[in-house]
Length: 167
Image (tube, rainbow, N blue to C red; front, side, top):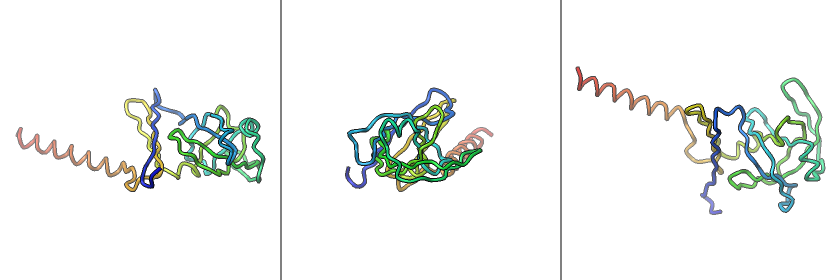
């Protein structure tokens, strides 16, 4: 891909999303031919990516280390594996250190170690969530404060102009 090209994806959920979930590809690091698809949840509250013991078993992932992870009410020492991840925009993130832990209904948790590689945007118009992610990050970041101020200034001018025309 040329140096300045961006790639992105958008997921439109039918209602206000309680969690942000996508299908992603996971393979042992450097072994793209073993790629399998799994459900992944995007979690801005997680510093690291996590896969389940099922993913570790399915892909034959060897532990390369151990680490302590902290959940809401617990601490655990868990194995660490090395994986490649294919995001929905076909970006391949290689050599990702992922903790192995139970996650509930998802197979993977995408943490900030992946999220901060790009730009993540969320919208919730009409009770429906739209999530988009772009890689690499844009030079002009998504700035909702700037957008709100511009929209409010325009609306204020419209009210002032209407008042002058209709005293």
